Length: 419
Image (cartoon, rainbow, N blue to C red; front, side):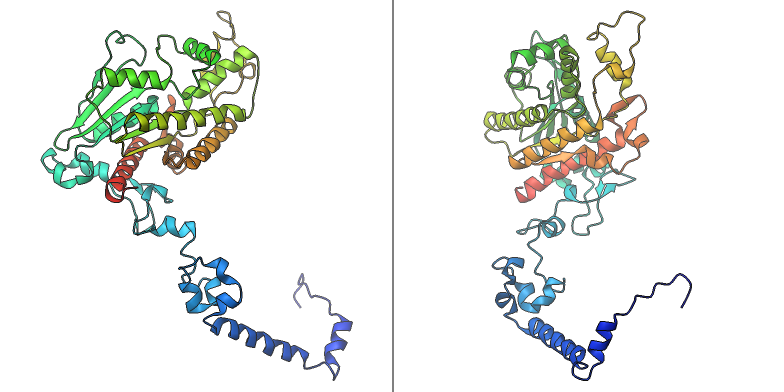
């Protein structure tokens, strides 16, 4: 026996038991019985019912059980088609699977979301649209004819708007309501893809903080001097009564995140508190506000085809410079004085962002709202390709192109399949 090998010790009691004349045939009999029972189970067409296997296959989906009984449990049949993973990979009820829901990566050439699933590998709407003469767009993209999309959110949402205008070679026009020309983020912006009639509009909102609370409104208004109407409902109504009065959206995308973390950061300084984990109440409030605002848009535009949310990426938690820039005036730092990072409460820590993302995703799914996720793209991209060294909040061009194509994919699927 080789050195270091392990040889299990034999049991004298077991050896003597099976070597006796009376019991020496028991191992053979046990083997024959096991084979017979196994063949009986696998061979019976009605075995799934008799053996209580209905739990594996819902009513009307027992082809795997009927064709193979116990064999289907081990993957030989089709009995697992009702599993959610199968729906994700193969679609359901005649609706093909969604490329945006698949594991994948940005295509290195045109940056659309590419998947290994041959049933929904991903379509390059953006690259084709960008390279195509405007005279050919109407025939090439029937899903997007005369569609209108509103982007309601922060600067990350504005970048998605700008990227789609760029893809369609569309000129951006900024226009503000009368008297709001000099207000921070007071303008709305629009563009239209010539030859396709597809229109995009963008308005800025100050995160998802509950500004109906006077204390919250006071901090938000002092945090963003030069702003006006910090709640989404007031701003949206004002825009659609003035600069966007002729814009009737078929689709609306909402996003938020960075501004909420700024509000919490300033609030924690004023209250002299420090939360390593984002308080559950804060994340729940933002999630509830997201649902309220999406419901608000659905009521405002009864003919709206779809409204969805975009989850942000994980912002860089090496945020010392941001904390000092935003926090110095709130900490009453004297000119020439410098405070260490530890003097400030957390801002963009990954722990805080993880709580925010988890609760936001859960509450939106509970409310049956669809969403896209920038983090899905960030996870499979090099940091230097996703962020610029000088901007650790906004994604770079490649990531923006990927997200723009995901947006177009969502719209196309809604037109084709009503989802």
